[in-house]
Each structure stands twice: as C-alpha cells, then as structure tokens.
Image 1: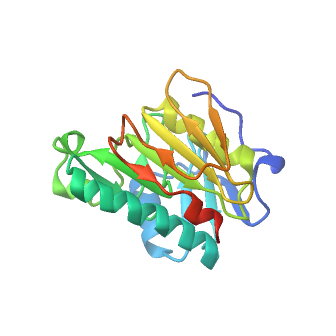
Image 2 (image 1 turned 90 degrees about the horizontal axis):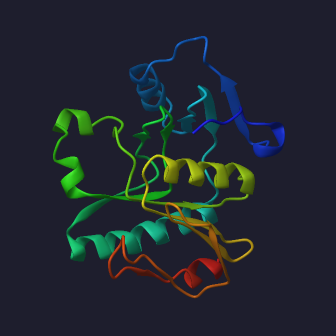
Length: 204
C-alpha cells in the first residue's frame, strides 16, 4: 500500500521516527536491534522508517493484557489458532515489520514454517489484529496501521479507543464500522464464538 512518510501530526511526541532507508537496515539487523533493546517497542514501516516507542503506562498495559487473556482463553478452547502478544513481530507482505497489541493466526498457516523461522519475525499477516490506543498514540497513526494490516491480508481488525469508548471494526472490502460505547464486540466469523467484554476496558 503506497503511503507518504509519517508527518509530525500523525506521530505522538513520545515516539522517535528515524528514516533508515539509505542505511539499508536488514531484517536480521532489525531483529537484533529489538533483541538488544527489550525495554523499547520498535516497528519498521514499509517506507523504512524506524519507529521507537517507550514502554506503555500501567493502565495501557493492563488493557492490552485483558484483551490478550480473553483472546487466549477462547483460543485454547477453539484450538484452531494461536494468540500472539505485543512482543511478537510480523514481517508483512509490503515489507513493514509490525507488532500489534494482540493477534491471532490459524495453525494451518504456520505449518509451512520451521521452528527456527518461527523464532524470528513471522513472514505473514495475522488473521486477526487488535490495537488498544494509549495516551501516546494518535488516532491517525493507528488508523493508518489498521488499514495496512487489512491491505496485507488481515481478515478482521479491531482498533479500541478506551478514551472515547469506541471500537473501530475493520473488514476487507468494507467501510470501517465505528461502535460507540459497546458492551461487547463479536469476533465472528473470523474468531468463531469469541465475544470480547470490552466494557471491562472502559472501567479503567
């Protein structure tokens, strides 16, 4: 998906964006950079911008774990896929390396990868992704990221804004749906039978 580099208005002041296009940062070098700096969260855009983010606050981390825990509980019973938390990274088809707050992948899609390959960035786009906004996020930046996931193969995406009590639902080929102050959000049909009690996040 073609996109111009990030503008100042699209990036929160607590993040550092470096243009590394001419440096030629390889995937292995970026993986090592992330491994050597585990206190930071880093992503690499398709335009070769290195985004460096500080750890989230306690409330933001709690919201992420609430979603990941409920998703994991469902996935264990469902058995058809695995849940990945925010520390996992994906190399998307467009070349970006992203780490969503929560994601889910069908097990059958992982069968073609070796254990060694799966110890590094996954070379695929997850079936489901969710991003939970923190105070350091800008809506434009996260919306852009969600659109990127869908363009690269994600079948369902949730952008959760706990400050405005909104959930933006992303589906391929459909307009983004904005749910105002929902109590629950259904993952059907991608996450068959999963219903997330998003109201728990609104309480924080």
